[in-house]
Image (cartoon, rainbow, N blue to C red; front, side):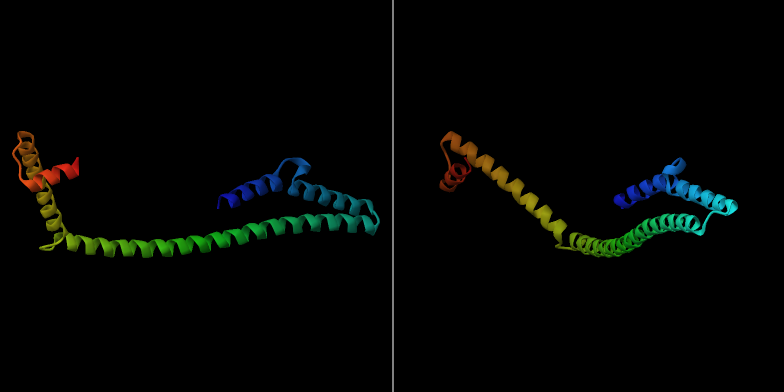
Length: 152
């Protein structure tokens, strides 16, 4: 998309430009020369040459425009595909969030399991702290010695 916007900007500068350095400026110049050649009664080869120059510029502009048009069509298709994928993802996320919420809130669900695990961790920490105090005093249960030794 960025490449296309750069291409469109470049085309706009080249097509419009200033003076005879642009497509339109050159076309106007050739058209004026063509009109003048008709007024002057110039030979047909001069008119034919100017006509070919104008047609070549028109073809070059047409080619540029068609290329940008094709890129726009491709971008539109890609954006449509992205939208479809995004809508599908949003639908999936909505469904999954509903499942997760249900699993969190139901009796015996994740919320209760998480709370139970937090309580277990708190209890184990208290038990560890108590065992560590006993160890420092020189009194401890045998399993506490292994637990403390394992964690240090």
